[in-house]
Length: 307
Ligand SMILES: *[C@@H]1O[C@H](CO)[C@@H](O)[C@H](O)[C@H]1NC(C)=O
Ligand SMILES: *[C@@H]1O[C@H](CO)[C@@H](O)[C@H](O)[C@H]1NC(C)=O
Ligand SMILES: *[C@@H]1O[C@H](CO)[C@@H](O)[C@H](O)[C@H]1NC(C)=O
Ligand SMILES: *[C@@H]1O[C@H](CO)[C@@H](O)[C@H](O)[C@H]1NC(C)=O
Image (cartoon, rainbow, N blue to C red; front, side, top):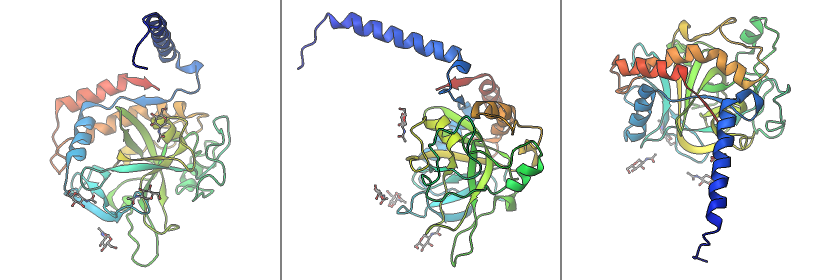
């Protein structure tokens, strides 16, 4: 029915006001509501870089390794790319025709705790393993956790290993990326999550895959519709790793024993804000130090978005 009844308009308007008031309330009281997840606004320099990649038709100019898949039946056009072929300060995933990566869910490592709502239960993730790649380093921190927890730690699966014949591999440590270093993940809609390089892709499947994160990270980007067997299929997510020891928070630089994602994320935010200043448009190789990049980083430091 195309006709509208004018008497309904005030009710709608009132509904809008209530909705707006609720949003304000939620934004102002993040600790009262456990369905809020900390996110960074995307600083200008990172957004410029992201837009540049989305508009780039050609494969990245400095590919360190290529031939990776985001989906089993997709194309092997995703590469690990560097901003500088000799001394990269950032390494990121990129495809062709403006594609980046999707987001599958990794449930590996420890589960349980107050944040475990069953979305990553055994059996929901097709390739579940009970340990993450750097479990021994996590344990060596001696902070009372035996491994990363997929519900708490926003970890990223990065790098590909395997010994099947012809299998494509890439070891980020060959280029100076350190285990348990901070990474940045840009999700569409002005959302950026700082993650930890916490796991690697193996050769248990048929194809060398990329684009996988813990359920904590996926939930921050998309909400609780993420589960062990339901990720995000769009090819517009950006994963960036940072080389060098100064990207590693180490034992004392992160709240490894945090009981929830927000607490952990907050603990690595200062380091993340510093690292993303390395990201500059023109990453065909040029490193432009723009004052806008610095300003963007500083701005991001003060801006948290609540979902
Ligand atoms: C992608 O797969 C095709 C067919 O298997 C192969 O010929 C090609 O070399 C692969 N591309 C890369 C970059 O590995
Ligand atoms: C891959 O398979 C899924 C499900 O079978 C389908 O929805 C999707 O369109 C396929 N993608 C490609 C690139 O063939
Ligand atoms: C990229 O775009 C070109 C030109 O439109 C097309 O021929 C090619 O198949 C595309 N490649 C992929 C992997 O989608
Ligand atoms: C998850 O839910 C959010 C909020 O309702 C929605 O915007 C998003 O598209 C959903 N994502 C997926 C992958 O289903």
